[in-house]
Amino acid sequence: MTPPYPKTPRTVLVTGAGTGIGRATARAFADEGAHVVAVGRREAPLVETAVHDPSRISPLVADVTAADGPETIVRAALDRYGRIDVLVNNAGIVSTQSLRTYTHTAVEPLLATNLLAPVLLVQSALPALENSRGVIVNVTTSVGQRGWPGNSLYAAGKAALEVLTRSWAVELAPLGIRVAAVAPGAIDTPIGEHAGHTPEHQEAIRAWQLRHTPLGRVGTPGEVAWAITQLASQHASFVTGVVLPVDGGAVVA
Image (cartoon, rainbow, N blue to C red):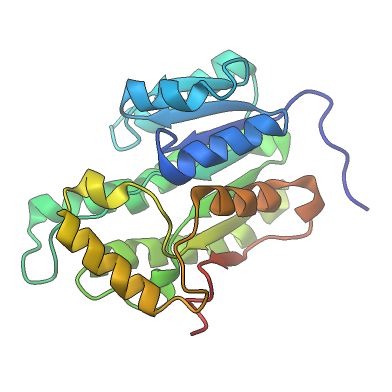
């Protein structure tokens, strides 16, 4: 039997909500009637995200990698809405560096954003998620299940997040918390531009992705957002520990 929806609107935390998958996810949850805390480091993109439904999307400028970032984000959500039902760990960055050029300085922000921040944010949100018997959805990458030459550390960090997804699903099940992940493939987002990739580099990456995508096209942020909302849905109440590729078949090709 599918559990009923809570009588009050769900509260959803989405990191990296200023653009791309995060923006589409925040808007998709708002369309379902949820209150959404849209988290990001830049105010202007978050405001643009919230324009979709200002009554339901609340921008929160915060850095998930800051020492007090997770606690600040969770406290802000609880102060505003009194509960957290869904946590979407979407924030992620790529680098212009590769195996031959990685330095300590280059590696730190990659791991801090893509791996450590989700760990500490989940930790901070656990009491609230236990109270609501909530859901955690991690955003990884389908390439993490294969390999990404030239961007190995990004893929490795996301692959580690998939292991955490499965581990947390078992660890948190007694608390009534479900944990799942979506693994996007080639999606039309500005993540490469934010990393400083040149148009030529970005074009080369897209060409490589398309050669490994059986459906032969780039996906949209909305297609990933749909998968996230479905995994967080009450109709998925018996689903936990899964990693759902949204990649046009890249993983199985």
